[in-house]
Each structure stands twice: as C-alpha cells, then as structure tokens.
Length: 216
View: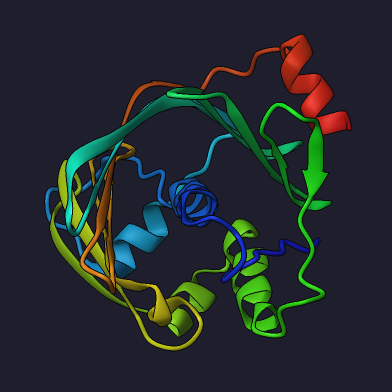
C-alpha cells in the first residue's frame, strides 16, 4: 500500500486531517492496568475492525483573532481505509486507502500526487508504516513522552526529522479507552485542537456515500 501526502502543496487542513486519522487509528487503547508506560501502551493497542466517531476541531492562528471551527465524522475501517468527512463549515471528504490520499471538495474525488515534491518519499514511508500499525516507525519519526494511567493518559510526540519537524513543534494526544483529544502545535505558533466523541466500534454496512468514496 502507498499513502502519499503532499507536504508542501497540500493545504494544512488536509495534512492535519490525514496525520490525525493515522495517529488515531494507532492509538485505540483498551483500559487495563492502573499504571502505564510506553511498553504497556504499545501492548494495549487494539484497533477494532471498524471505528466511527464524531470530531469537533478548533484552529487558532497567530495574528488572527477568530477561531476557525469545523465538525464532522471519522470512519476507520481495516477493510476499506480511513474516511474523514467534514460537514461544517463546508463539506469536504478525505479518503486514505490503498490508492493513496483522495480529496473530494464538491467537485469529485481526486487523488493527490507527489510527482512535483521530492520531499514526500520519506513522509510516504512513514504514513504507510503508521497505517500498517508499525510503531517502530512512529518512534523513528517522533520522540514519545507518555504520562498518566491507562484510564487517563497523555502522549506527546515531538518530531525527530524532516519533513514533519518543518511543520509541527509537537503533537499531544489525550485519552482513556480511545484517543479523545489531539492538539497539533505548528512551528508558526498556530494550533489545532480536535475532540473526538461518540465512538462506535460496531461493524456496520457502509452508507451509499461511504461505499462510493471507497470504491471510486
């Protein structure tokens, strides 16, 4: 599988969405022991066959007084891939599957290409490995700092190398049984805070729209 990301030409909203989806798919944790270290957290990772959730996103930008808000739904499926559906303030679908990253902003689903950006090769490798559940790759690209217990934990990811460290200062994940909050701190001083809720691990038939996006 290849998962390509247009690091510099892709709008930052899509970069955050794609990276956040993949990190969320890795960090679905089952609560067990009262104390938690990184080894235990890794052992507890348990991605279900399918997971649906609602997300609410707030973005603050340096020099811009208004907070940018967005809401939508997330579907993580081991059979099909990942679907990030933003419903407000405008509709946008981001699909991550074996075809790569595809975006539909109302004009049809389009695959993104890395042909004009040589920096994508290392990021593509990271993205593919993360979606496959290769945590050694996560540690290769990030310094991990874990605090808390299995019932309430915080994982801070600090980028080690290019290209991700050119954009993000660090990424913070908070959760218990699932990742419930993700905060992405940009190098420019901007931040994006995403809250996940209404988790549903039940396997359900794809809706007509979901099936169309995955089968395009």
